[in-house]
Figure 1 (cartoon, rainbow, N blue to C red):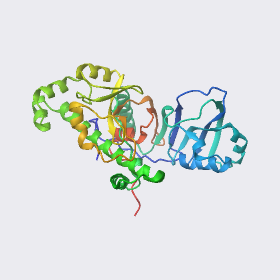
Figure 2: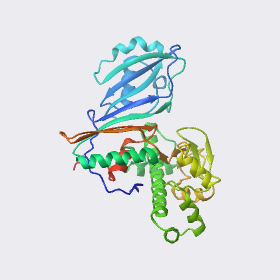
Figure 3: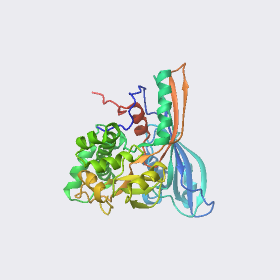
Figure 4: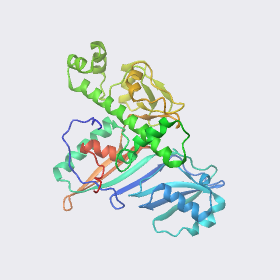
Length: 362
């Protein structure tokens, strides 16, 4: 159960992830050079996972798995635009792709293939239904506020399987001590990494909420922290409170550093120059220091060494946010851009204040 950062009352709306209502456009990190031995293909796909997309190109061209590059994974139940790469020698074989669920929008040449992570972010256009005019207006106001103040970068429900429990299998595999076999086992263990991150982030949001909503004396009693520490936290102007030893990263991408001066770091955080990061437990990963390490440790797992660890932004800011309401159909078209790896559903859930996970049919 995650903790929401914003105090407004829930905003009801109907969300359905489908080709008609959920559109994602990948924002590339660089423009093609126009020369080189690799093709960069800008593709639009419909009701198709990225894995299935790559398999279709593999089957049509005869290319090896390792020869087809992509920047990020995109949803299946959606209309999505993304870029892939493959060696120029396979260009003539593209004619073998006949499915109407794939459209090649552009072809360019480049000196290097595409690698995972080579994207700026994703732009979303989502249609919400069964929303009243008043709730649409409230939705817009909260979204605009979040564009300025940011929101917690939770992993979305999609990360954890249909029943939300795939992380449990991942934990068992991670603790078995064996080498991971295939993409499925890696996905399950990464779901466990994501579960630990979400749990840590929820605890940190709750901690920040206590400091924000109570007097310093009350907050000190609730959290069991020394009064001088609460006083310092209270003086930080932003909602998400920072601690000494916090693992920080330049935003939206850049070098890592550690918090040594909470007041100075808080100012940079408020200006969107840096953001704190949370741990994705695993091999060869840097961990927080000092007080921040104390908060991170309960959500770490040093037995998880079968996957490389990483750090993930804890707090992000949506950009290019806008809403358009159609009264006759009671629909709200929402547009926004998020950094790579962020979930549109996490943004919508923070506004709605309830889980969007589809109910399983019995």
